[in-house]
Length: 295
Ligand SMILES: Nc1ncnc2c1ncn2[C@@H]1O[C@H](COP(=O)(O)OP(=O)(O)O)[C@@H](O)[C@H]1O
Ligand SMILES: [Mg+2]
Image 1: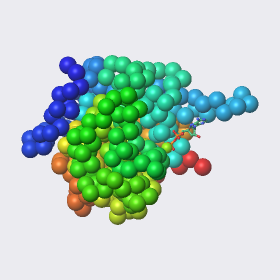
Image 2: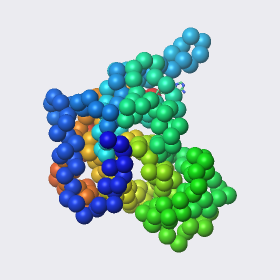
Image 3: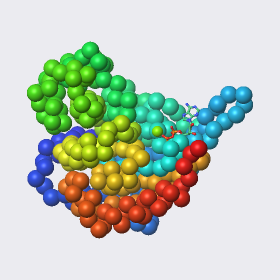
Image 4: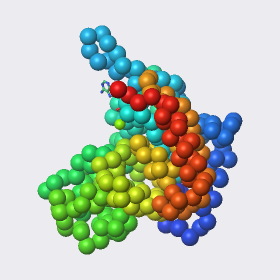
């Protein structure tokens, strides 16, 4: 079975959302277990250690004993204090760095393989849009990088999906911060990636715009149903979006807790006003407070 079922299922938005229940049925062990039964249809980090050599014989142990599976079609959020290794996890998954020991597998292949096949969608806080290129050209960029002809229908579909209709020809400097982030997310989605990696994509936005973007991303994700890992500082953001929230502690960075989020879908920011949401915020914030902020 390939990856196309998830992507082709993306257009059926009318079906009831039973996906979370199916996903978690495969998990073994206790409710906060984060290992799935073996299957190539998932992303996995197995016994991953990462040590950085910082010169003069000194090393920084950034990650120890990281074991995490992400099921196909699942949205996982990664939270933790600054410096606990969240970006390092993402970089390992993106094939931008390698482990010191342990395995990273994306749907049965090493990350470099998916990267070579242009099956990774990546949006980091520094969204790095081309300043001289229009919204359309920025979103089309991955086709050019992949040496493929631009699918104008797909680009138009993405512009509509992220709510930028009418701004096709605008330059990044003519857009608000939230609009630029939407361009970056559209660009990450345009090639129908198998895995979407988001590192603090809304970190630079004000609180109101950030919440609006959370609702947008929740809606986009419910349409595209992509396997997604989101790194965030923001507990609310993690709970609005994710099927599971992974709490890391530093240092060295390790997985402290995995919380399955059973809040009903589809979700938007109105979920933040429910008692169940507040309970989860309290629980995870308490864990973060105990997890130790770096420096
Ligand atoms: N390229 C690097 N060289 C040396 N140390 C690094 C490098 N990248 C990250 N680190 C260190 O690894 C730890 C984890 O960093 P990072 O993954 O960026 O944390 P986070 O994203 O959670 O803030 C930090 O102590 C950081 O200083
Ligand atoms: Mg980081």
